[in-house]
Image (cartoon, rainbow, N blue to C red; front, side, top):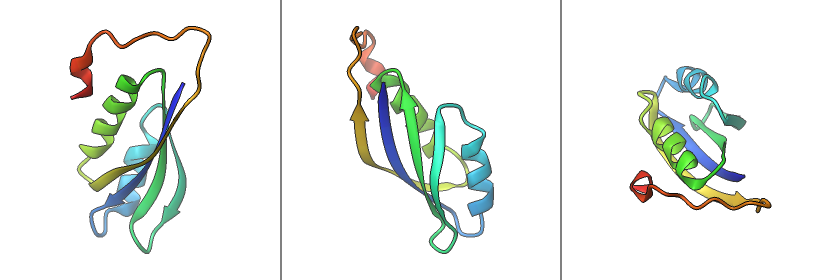
Length: 91
């Protein structure tokens, strides 16, 4: 299982909308909200890095989001490691 932490910033005045949009997504959790700076910390959980990248792109593409930055990544090894077959997903 892979975990990534993002700092996500909203457009001015759109922070509540951004939080609502992120909360509606699967495999993400908001861990900290700072209304003064219009930023939050989001954790993405995915089976592989491709799934995480897809979710990162989905968050980045939200209308309410001005910036999404990866600040940490961690993975837990499982008994079975499955390589990514389609490397184009990482672009």
